[in-house]
Image (cartoon, rainbow, N blue to C red; front, side, top):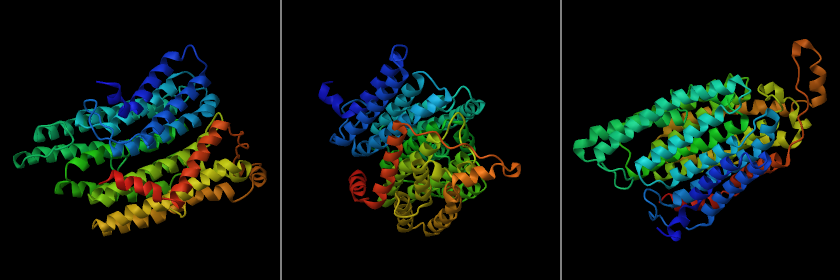
Length: 478
């Protein structure tokens, strides 16, 4: 093995080496320096992947830098970098100290990069579970909150069961195909039943990873209990990684007829139940958790088509959803003091008392609702376009109706932000019947300004100028 063999997988090396360096340097270096080192490393990994040519050759056993990896790694790096920036001030205010947080976040990026470059089932599975293992730690890292520990335990117990199911499914696929390689893993007719059972197990496990109904019950509790920057990372990076895992399996093995009915039901139930449950929520993180179930139902709808347009829509929506949720949870993290603003009513007048962060949160809500010219509209358009082209017209209509209904709970946040000024809100708080209104938010740090600006700019840029991203995706999905 030569240095030229390692160059294509440098994002993996950068993120892995940086994770170890941050962890080992923790006792010797100040916390702020460690955080900025992690930010630089994650950004460097994404930039390297974006500018390096995708060869597709297997230079290291089980790993290859393909065009899919060239697209996914910058998305993962973008989510990681913004999560680290958002966590600077948040962790200081909440008393989350030590080198564990930035090192585990970098380790998560390392596992995501490995997943994007994987060429066989074993590495693909190990990478996906390494991502989940890192999130078990991150979700419960706020030791001062009982909610955080409870959320981490729930995620761990249910995630372990899902991991076992996926592992068993991959074992059955291997038994039926006789190979761990993704390329050429096609079953013979006599082993069709074994491979079908394996695919069924994989679908069940991936349904948990994507929070698809009925494997969604962990999602609201984990989102609510996790620190807001971790919830941002969990709702974006892990979801895109799980979707990429399933997409890579589908790309090298033609979808079987038996998979249509399970995916159809998962998509239908997720879109309907996720959006209806979100209508009832008063806690903003639980509302975003239930809405994420609906969004993953849209992804399942695109996967269901089994077409090039559907797979392109999955990757496009994954990138767009990453920008939207980073903006939403990032604004929530930045507006949080020693305690988070949990209730939607707690954001009354914030659009006036904190104009920039309130504006980013409002933009994120508009994008999640699919209102043009934001990126959310573009993502939903391509999802439903691919579904109709793929023959899933009925399910696409149900998705469109559920997406229209979701506008109510997204716009309710915007109403709270701008329905009245902070002075009126504080005047009303003098009445015990109306409850108390939190004090004006603290000033945003420079790191939070940078992270929120990048997320908001991405939401608008993709929505207004989608052509560059679409050209990249056209090269990825051939």
